[in-house]
Image (cartoon, rainbow, N blue to C red; front, side):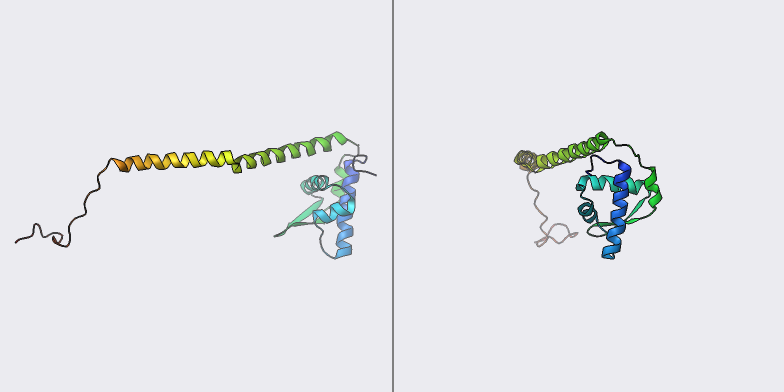
Length: 158
């Protein structure tokens, strides 16, 4: 059976079963990559199913410093998943995710590209030139002569 030929309900049942099996076998809550490896689902589909099952209350996620781990919260909630095969829904959601990720990558590439760096450098240089022009026309005022004229004493007497 491949993930395109089975319903969302069956995929949910497999994910919940994998969580139970790995928890029993390893004596610890499994990560998404461990469950993906056991079920044979691609990581994108596994994470999509996790989000669905988490939103429904079938699974519970324990956030860790390095990864999230999962346990079964209410296995009966899986019964609410659609039992019909609709491969288009999963494909559409994966394509949407990929498009968003590609857009973010493109934006990051633009931010760190040479063109953006050059534009930022030019803007900063113009800013500094404007600030410098403000100083160029002013004559610096001389500091008070405090050695020969103590403050508050007026003019020195000779």
